[in-house]
Image 1 (cartoon, rainbow, N blue to C red):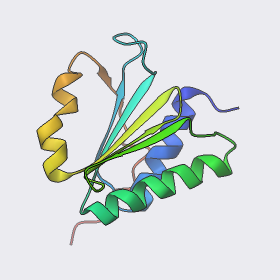
Image 2 (cartoon, one colour):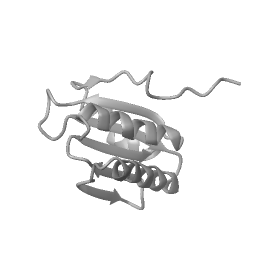
Image 3 (cartoon, rainbow, N blue to C red):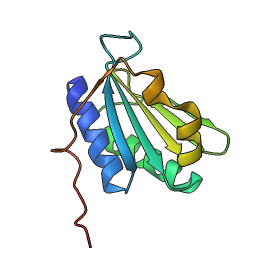
Image 4 (cartoon, rainbow, N blue to C red):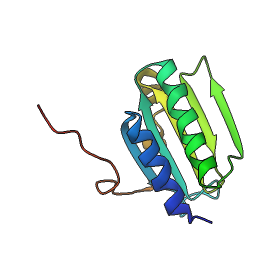
Length: 123
């Protein structure tokens, strides 16, 4: 059984490996009882959003962590994955700007993902 932080990090790695953009992990356990973490990510298209979510779900299944629910919105401009302690939000750029979850959850602590996300070398 993985800890909430380990679940968050594994999904972060999965999204990063599929080229998810601007990945942010918010620790919300002190400001909400909804979950321990919100993971927010941007996909380049509706198809990319679906691919990111499918791979996150697959990764967690492989680790024995079942997903509690998955909801889509407007043709995959935003998908939500609920893993209990972690809620994953994957948006298109436009949907992410519209919903502005980072602003909405400004009181949440931002996790440092520098050791989790692999930086692409600059050309």
